[in-house]
Length: 263
Image (cartoon, rainbow, N blue to C red):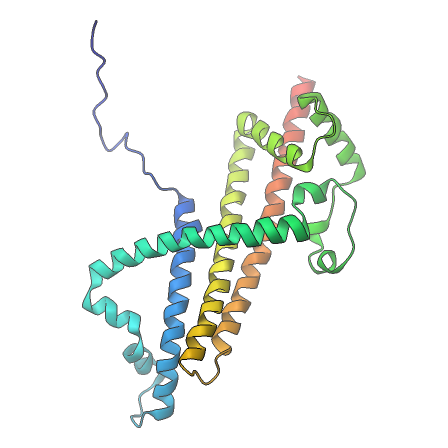
């Protein structure tokens, strides 16, 4: 019996264990979190330098002198840089877990509702539908009826849930619509990035409150308030992209299944 020969390992058949989502979804949120924490630590030193220093240094010189991060990098550049990336990447995973639990599982699932449910139900009223109207805009009755007929003809399910609509449509698109699936994954990566960045700002704002209060910062709520404001646009964009993902999946399923039936 002849022995099977394995292909030699070359640079061409090596695959990287990391994806773009590792960079945008984990590493960048971790970097944002720690950079904002470092800036919060530096804020007390910089503010006291303005209040107590007799030397007429300009703003740029003060920022350079009192930046702890720059001083650390000058002393141990390569080791600190590599360690910082690792810590940021691990922190990004923790931030992603927290943002998924609170920002999606709790807030979206139990308060707003997932787009898959909203798109196939009647228009809601109240505070949240008034604040983010496009998120709560459902499909037309004609499209809902035709989609549900097409879905039943494909999967033959009695009383499918909104979760059934999304995940079965997603699997169908993944197997039959490569272009639409690529767009769906693009929306998926973007919405994960925005959700995690939003919570990186939010968590750093919470930590900054304790840091600045413990250091007797003159205005302890100023920096956390700015960081909190920074989290809102990213979370709003996350909700928009989450709806776009669902809409792309449902419309791609409907379009492709109609072509299959016609053929």
